[in-house]
Image (cartoon, rainbow, N blue to C red):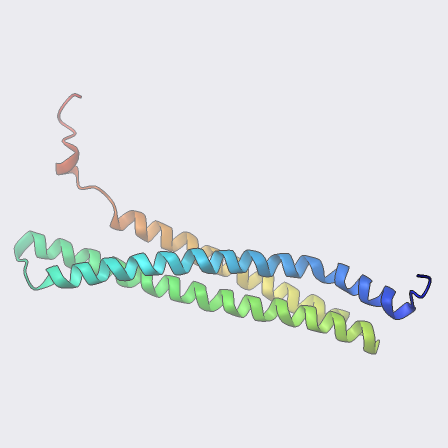
Length: 155
């Protein structure tokens, strides 16, 4: 059992160093899953409104068009967030690869690893801002009209 080599120690240290980026990848996967679910619900709502589009007129039709516009915004925002998350995952994956290459080749790639990690975190933050924006658009689409709330009545 005393056959632990310097190579074994280097591999263990590199794996320890790569743990943080791996946790970021797991978080990105979870966010991608959440956004994909939201996109699925948006697409389902779009299909429902598409059926109603040609069968409505007047104020009812205008309400459908307003919601369709919000759904279009949501789909764009989710799509952009998903693209950023994939770029984030690629950047974080590159960080892990660079860490391992540097550990074995000893060619001074730490600044590159730091750069790819910083880029990944920046992309993640941008994607989260888009996620926040999408939830705001969703709230706007789900706003209950005042006539349904009957605010003039005491309940």
